[in-house]
Image (tube, rainbow, N blue to C red; front, side, top):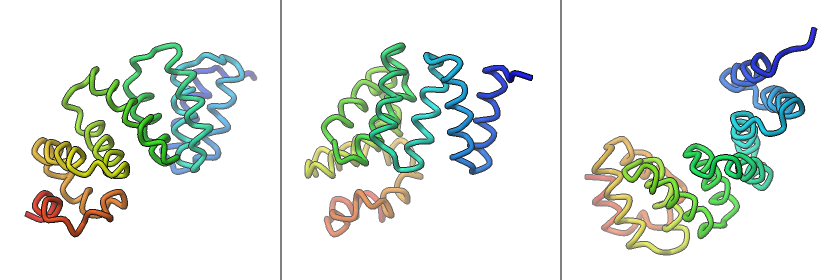
Length: 165
């Protein structure tokens, strides 16, 4: 019996939620074989590829989804993350900026932008955005304290004030 796109997609989600990214990748690939322009499957396949450290491949799937819907917030955020991990910080920040036009106070987009700015050595701008994030959501203090992207500035008093007090 032929499985429907809906069933395959949901099996992919289930696999992903159960911590089986390779199995999920197989399901999303099957969805895309049947419906190459299935935007949800494109984004999810990008997510799985990102989890597997295949960031360049992930970006290409986000690009396909964004070609259909340029203001897909999730695709923009995740493409930005993949670009960040590829050390393409300027491009990552561009994705976050578009996402922030859609949702100006989104703490995830702001936090990710802060991380990329810090990695670009734009310390003051990154810390300013990080302060906004921490003011909006206290839980980001702990996240920033242990985030590898901020390790290089842990010694700065401005950073310590943000995450320690």
